[in-house]
Length: 129
Image (cartoon, rainbow, N blue to C red; front, side, top):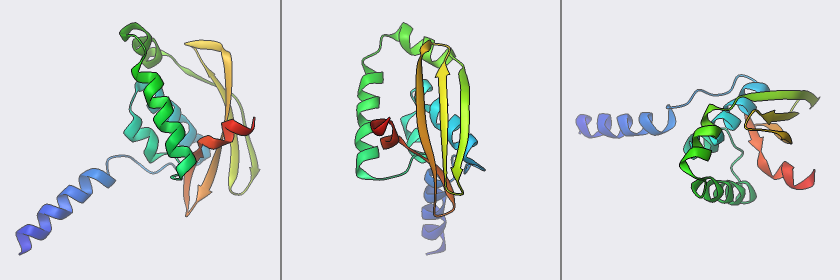
C-alpha cells in the first residue's frame, strides 16, 4: 500500500512541481512570454489564469505556433523579450507592455493578475486593448 502511495505522489510531483511559482508580476509575464516563444504551451499555461476564455486563446495561439515553419519557430525561440512598460495598477493587477526582437514593430500589452496568491497572465486582456 505504501508503494502505491509513493508512486502516485511521484506522479503528482512531476506534473505540479515542474515549474517555479512566479515571485511577482514581472516574473509571471516573462516566464509566460518566454514559454510561448519557445512553443512550450504546457509551461505557458502554468503561468496563465485558468478560465475558459484564456484556455481558448491559448489553444488558438498554439495552433498558430504549430503552423509556423521550422525557421520561424527557431527565430521565435532565439528572440529576446524587450519590456517597454511594466505598470502596477493596484495590488492585484499589473500591465506588461513588450515587444520581441523577432518582431520589434509588434507591441503587446498583457495583464498579470494575482489570483489565490499566484501571479498569472490574463490573456483575455489583449481582447480589450
